[in-house]
Image (cartoon, rainbow, N blue to C red; front, top):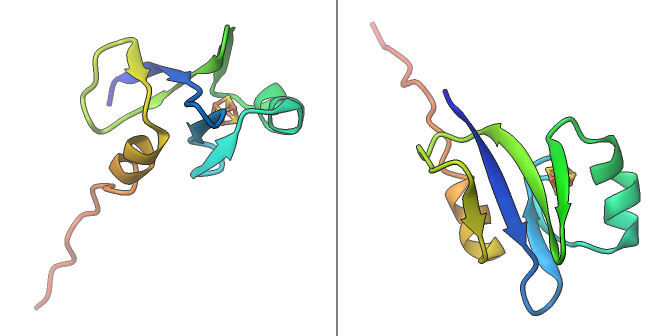
Length: 87
Ligand code: SF4
């Protein structure tokens, strides 16, 4: 699966979707220091956001500009799981 850089732009409430925590978070100093600072997906800071890189099943362009954390959260819950075979 290809890796995509996600340019996560903070919304008007300062929130982004965080892949590591799999939740919408406020990109404040606590998030930056306690999570982004130690995260293997971290690539760079934006003026109002963060660049994170991970394998994304959506087949996104690289970079992917993410401006809606709610939509990002929803999309990232749709993981492909192999169907179990019976019999
Ligand atoms: S760098 Fe890691 S911890 Fe920070 S927002 Fe991206 S995925 Fe989350």
